[in-house]
Amino acid sequence: ILDNELVIGYSSWIKKRETAYDLKLLKNYVINETNYINEFDKQRLKFKKAKNKWLEESMYKPELLAPAGSFEKAKVALIYGADAVYCGSSSLSLRSRASVENDDLSNIIKYAHDLGKKVYVAINVYAPDNMYDEIKEQVEILNKLYVDGVLVADGGVLDIVKEFAPDIPIHISTQANTLSAHTALFWYKNGAKRIVLSREMNKNDIKYLIENIPQGLETEMFIHGAICWAY
Image (cartoon, rainbow, N blue to C red; front, side, top):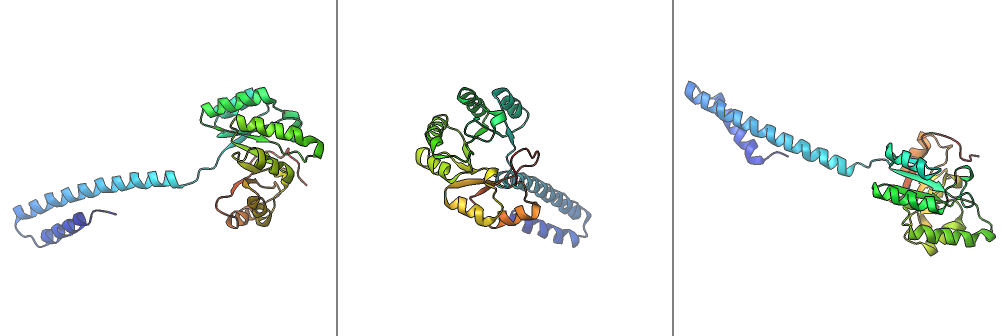
């Protein structure tokens, strides 16, 4: 880590100092030794800064995600520290009591992106066939708005996102109730980038799952609140 020449030079000065009996010579050795120590300190500081920078760049920082039932609520969440917000319409998500329609959705996405933050939209309804035209329309709108991800629970909806907006990252909603690494791997093979884990999982379950899925598959978990459906 430290400069080899500096280490060798410092060691040499220590040996000379230990064998010096002349006071002037000893003083000279001590001065030079002090210079070496100062240089060591500089290099240690340089190394510490480099180490801290490496840690900052290499250590994954969890994303803090908050729900947003309106444009105003999204602004509050983002201003007060959320890295991202999620929302959904009343007809295509299971957030029927906190729905956000297209105009507000556009404003939320623009506002978040201006702050360098993200917006995820839930299309996590379990859809009968007569809803798929509306789902296609919603996916195409989200694609034009450059949404940062879509939350789905239904395999049919996932296929629609892949077909009509292949660049939008797919997140598997907690409504899909993913409890195992096997299920997570299934979703990964079908195009998912992130899995929102089941509320029923404990810390050991979560740890095991994370250790047994591909590194490229993200995991998300709720740390507060239990309003969503749970079995």
